Image (cartoon, rainbow, N blue to C red; front, side):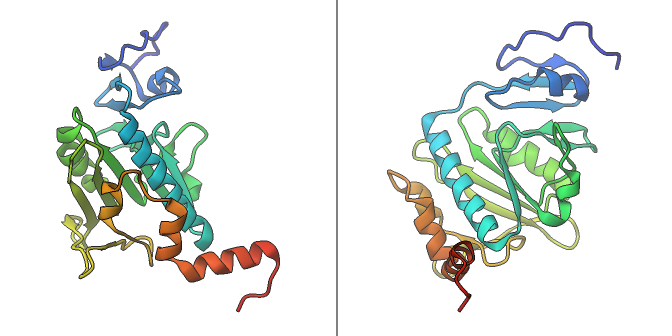
Length: 226
């Protein structure tokens, strides 16, 4: 597609034809936007509840990756460029492990993340639960987590890619917790998302990985590990 002389003004909720390179220039710095099948869209703003859940999850995943030295977390306005459809998605959160850090480009992340997460809103249920799920499965995103950001919503779905390249739902353990297969040792209790206010992510991290947190701060303070 030839480079457009002038990119269209941002009108949230409206699709515009453009190349991926044009989309990268056009996407607003604030708020989510996506590029699918040669068209770009900027979505309407998220609810406060959506943002509270995102901040909680972001700090929790960041903390776990930091104390284990595993990788990085990207949120909301970071683009994940997938070539099979093609598309440029902005998951609410995605994880890139250290072994794939070479795919972090200056303006986007190239290829499937190691874990992608979407927070459901009223307008995005079909898109996140079905359209993106099929797309992330086809692109071999190893884990895809869907949580509910709607008032009184109860959807919680953690998918992992089986050896045949098909998403299967991870079942909860006897305590109702979901264990990641990409992030060894990481588990999540979905009842945390039903609390108002949401719990302190640092306290949750201490419950998930107490030994790793202790060792991390010992290293920071220069204390010998036990």
